[in-house]
Image (cartoon, rainbow, N blue to C red; front, side, top):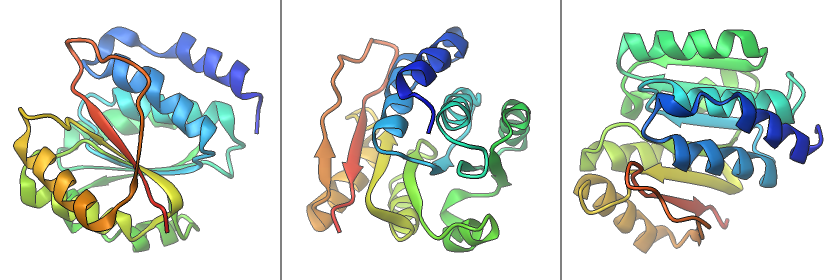
Length: 198
């Protein structure tokens, strides 16, 4: 692992901050989580403008050796998948971009195809529909390692599908909620970070 302080400084210097509404939330939050929790294999659901894809890719590329770092991204729009490929290609990390609905993904198979058994982190920022969010949580929790992180974006009353799906899951699973040490700006939706305990 490279020096995390130098790596984080490099990441923050190379993020295109004005590209996304999620820039403050994910631009600062994700690189720190990836470094602190040694997340080398990451699943990303929902690519959109590929800002988050770029942040994760830069983080993996700067923090870990190329053969250690893997990002599996999924989106149901072709244009989002093309943007992800474009930002990941020059980073020399293992990556696969899947153009399909996330709730139909076989994540165990997708991980096996890149020589991995578990994910260290899952980022869910796709559909806000309750059933899809529940399925995304259910499908990815099975491949998340013990003490791995699940980051769910748009955890707010204005997104009742996300809020209800996460609350129901948390009531049953009792995963540890990690504190987010910042006050989100008005342009960012809140996220919740859950850590698998067993």
